[in-house]
Image (cartoon, rainbow, N blue to C red; front, side, top):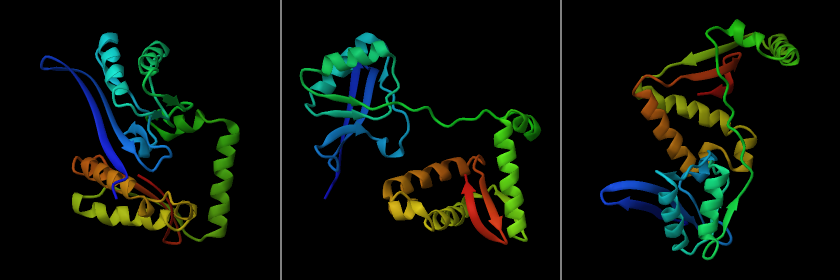
Length: 214
């Protein structure tokens, strides 16, 4: 049974693409709703348009789908959001849940500068946890791996095994339990890995993986 159905809306001006809304019908929601095709990733979503006229045409086309639309993290100006919602009002409902900023940290050239930018509570908390870890385990270290393309599956398997050992597996959000996210992460890792831009970081206690980032 297909739980998703593509509904990609494109607005053309002659041969020029001026607006787009890459959507899909999510039949797992009750009632079924249109959502961004990458909604499963939880990332912010942007409507693509050249100007307000193109946005208006995009909204009219989306209304013609006659389906409710759910944007959990829509990034748009208040003016554009009002324009889009108003054009849909007679034919479709738009649900915009609160937006949250992404977790982004700008790193300076060296760790000492980065550490100095932390609050004193954060610095002392990290040092306290490190002392506890080294007191309770004989060997605590961090391993960084920049894999060759052929080594990527092995490193992804390490991550999935570690992620599947805790609460994410029980909640059904681990990569091993989420086919779409697993495919997305695998494609992303391969794309970056072939250009040498992929790094895996593992925290290890006595040779055992206990935490990871990539």
